[in-house]
Image (tube, rainbow over all chains, first blue to last red; front, side, top):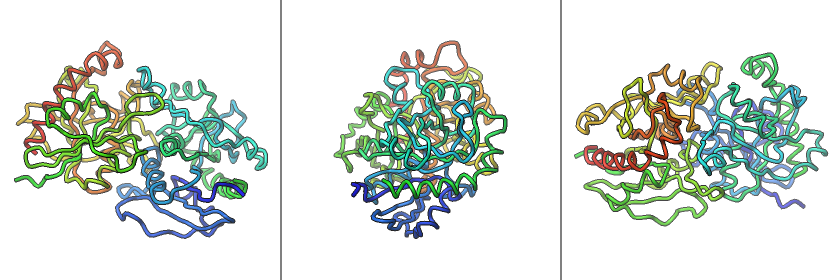
Length: 236
Length: 236
């Protein structure tokens, strides 16, 4: 039996999480702190305790709190309250035509997650900014699940500048999203293994704008994400 | 007497905080959680309880944890443990020649702090990304202290792209730094007033690179920052 008994599943958007919550039958929990936006769902799946935490809604603009700041608050409170053996970050992402990505593809983060929008050109700070966190070993799992393995790169913008793309290419990034490296940073502080699972909604180096492709493909990608996240939990 | 009895002073770098810690005689506190990087110093100053929290060091690269992710962890644990009446973010920053900024100038954040590196071109998310948090009213204080008032803009890079500058100009940003808006976001969640005080180390639209100017002027700007932060606490 696996040593992983308790999984903290950190997610940004409710639409990305809906099918997982319904399929496993996770139940919404009472808040530890009523002011925190984080929403917690929990339940048992097979022999594992699952805590799924959403970043929660922004009360000012009615949207999900996406990006790194909200993810830090989410994962830290999740660690404090639930003491997980593994932190899993599931979400949607951009893929790259240069890496043959297609909408609906699933990636596990391997071997690293990086930041591409923290440029700090002073020795030591440069490496801190880039992050480069090692992920939970998952190559055997990608084969079992029939999914891809790739470097995940995090930034706080949905779009990209030419410099963002250059930085992502420098470390062979195959998945561009907005949360993983920040969550990995907190996981690393607490010595908890980290893994990201990402479903491709849009092709970053393709011809459509990210916003249009993202909105068009969010439901489809979230459905595949839900199925593969559950399969992943089964084999962990 | 002021309603502000307890101040949480959130800072990123030890070098920025050193003169404040020494001048007020703040004492290093035992950690609530030994794994957290955050370092807490505290003491009384006049009638006020001061909790100064540093983001702490990155154990992998030996540098201070700068930027928004580390600041979220810092301010959240500070709020949890110390229940402040006001959150003050003191630090160094870039100024702009177009706004007549000079190295050593001190700004209080007014009226807003924004993010300039969270571009999310979907309605609702756009506004969430930009942030635009209202700061503690400080125009009278800037006059008393002989310091400037200006819009503060936050991003996770020390340098800037042309697009960063364009965004900062759009909302008349006069101060560019790496923490304020993330701290204001958490302060806003908990309904706690927020104010930033920033000392200029470099001129963003000047001829020198930010890294060189920043390193050259860090000690001088931090000294002025310390003096004005203490004067600010005296009048709050």
